[in-house]
Image 1 (cartoon, one colour):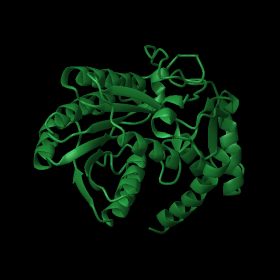
Image 2 (cartoon, rainbow, N blue to C red; image 1 turned 60 degrees about the vertical axis):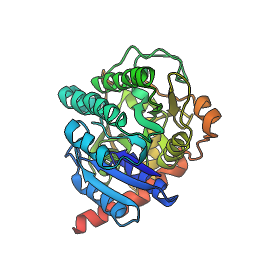
Image 3 (spheres, one colour; image 1 turned 180 degrees about the vertical axis):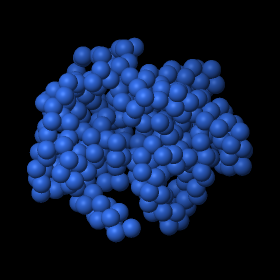
Image 4 (cartoon, rainbow, N blue to C red; image 1 turned 90 degrees about the horizontal axis):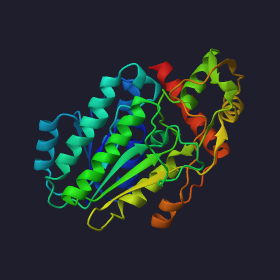
Length: 327
């Protein structure tokens, strides 16, 4: 099967491509390699993928309709799309909201229109986010909860994507699954995420900021569990008159951020220099995923605890840091 995967040089995209190639799929990866974080990390991921059979890379912005539409015309054998490209980062959306609307909303719309040109398309799986739950206080977060109170521009763009997908499923019968990811972490991760930036600061002896004393809680989900959920969902397209659904992918555990810091200190062998600050307006107090829906569909069962996942990340991080200092 030929699969188009956007955001192929990103954290989740890289790991999903590896999983798909490992089972013999052909993957056309798209990424614009933007400079939101260190491009060297994106290029290193990409180099790993380009060494594997069955992978082809196209450097492109998913919001560029001419390029994306020409791509799918040239590859009309595409049977599935995994759309992971997006401008990430909740807090950065306060600084550059235009980038989020362009990449996340226009980019999603372009992918939907491109999907309509594919005669053999069976399923479009796209990345949403736990941030859509916003000010919702019902825990654990369930797909049936209200999601009309976003706390950031990023969250609002992700909810807009879900609504666009619902309309396209209703109007055009386009089978789609939106996946609400919960705080993904692991090797080859994103430097703007707390666990990665904390590790960098700890190793450099620089202070880390703990909001509300580290008492904020997150459903930390290891990358291997995320990949299992994505691939399991991809294999099971929805049916019916409006073939569309939304699914949480999380670890079904809510843990305090200060526990994350403790594990990083232990694995990196250095104490963290900590300072406290009030919780930013864009941050929620707690995330916690209900995963019953995806479990019923795919058998999804998250296997990796924070105590298991952080040592794996820390081992990769130390090796990456050493190689970066040498280059």
